[in-house]
Image 1 (spheres, rainbow, N blue to C red):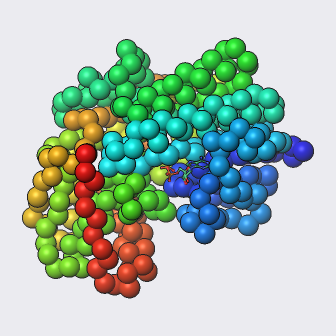
Image 2: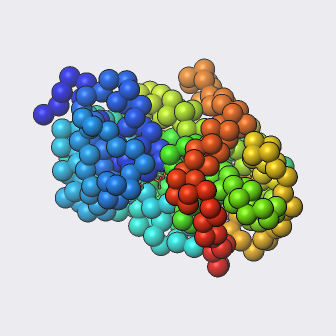
Length: 340
Ligand code: NAD
């Protein structure tokens, strides 16, 4: 049964962005929210009473049909993913997310879902356009000719394309955001799937605790990126999902920073200065990447605007508190860079 506000399904709800999206929907008064993730409930970052929380594996076709039953809107955020350390060493696993996207699209089509939002990624962009740290920001058209990040990026680009053809051929209203590096509290900060902002916050905390004032940086540190704070991601996601913009849109900050610059900001927040060592062979992705926000501004007169400094301050504090909870103020085991 669909209720007045329509059933809203969030997949990947035990993860970082999905957990925040469920929280935002609950805050906005949605009473018919279904949250789905394959992780056991105790490992979800956020769990809310009054939400239909389901632990289920969305690579399975029949599960996707159960999950879409009664849903008007689907936010498809489930994917096997992580930072560069994960996606460069788990390409096949990343590509298997195509099972989730295929089955979720089929289920949405056949169960009468009205809106299907897909979380794509800046990893769909052509690598040739990202070979210089001094970047020209990526425009949406730069995804073609296709030469995306191997594994993870190919899966995202293919699934974007499926969304497009399900809309054109079957009338399913699909909407697509290309997220550029999202960070914030209540996300992965250890274990090998964390992304650069969380990893750097953790390493700085470890350096402070150990008294060994040095830090290992993956790559040359000169590679550039932009990082979007979670609140901007949530607002943009909901704007894109509700809009009539059918083409993929960049959803990212345009505040470009080098990884060295990112470390400097975290050092400043933590009140330390560390000696830097570089791991040139560690996974570090393309040389430079930024989000061109002309299109999103044109459509919504809006773009992500939280400053990196403000967002990192909140993120550092949360990771610091988690670290203290987990290791009781002592130094936990440190993680090595994955082998290639
Ligand atoms: P996350 O890893 O925190 O969350 C993804 C969740 O999907 C996880 O909790 C995982 O358990 C779940 N999942 C994986 N396989 C599943 C399956 N078979 N069935 C059910 N659940 C499954 O990642 P996130 O940062 O919250 O990212 C959400 C989405 O946004 C992903 O699709 C990701 O590719 C995309 N994205 C994220 C970023 C970013 O910077 N965080 C950037 C670009 C795109």
